[in-house]
Amino acid sequence: MILAGFWVSARALRLSLGPLGLSSLSDAAGIPVLLLVGGAVSLLMLPAAHALSRAYERSADRFALELTRNPEAFVSAMKRLGAQNLAEDDPSRLIQWLFHSHPPIRERISAAQAFKV
Image (cartoon, rainbow, N blue to C red; front, side, top):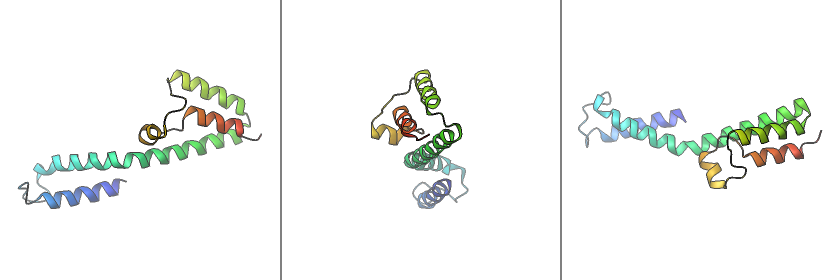
């Protein structure tokens, strides 16, 4: 994602040399262009980063359940964490896709309840 951001930023700087009056790629006046393009790339890549994070969290949950063999304790911990952090139990798919780096509490609890000891 960082490489994509740098690539897009470099392309944007090259394209803005003439129209913005920048003397070269190293012109300090190009910093706002870099910040705007970097922010846009970051915003566009955020759903992919969140999806990857959710996949890691699901894997970590599975590992914890396999290690402890105690889904009841996991469910209890998830309920406590959800209440403590005021987490929404079942957010919409769009909200999950855009903003959540962890699976929803209800999904995590369902996975633990379905876990075969």
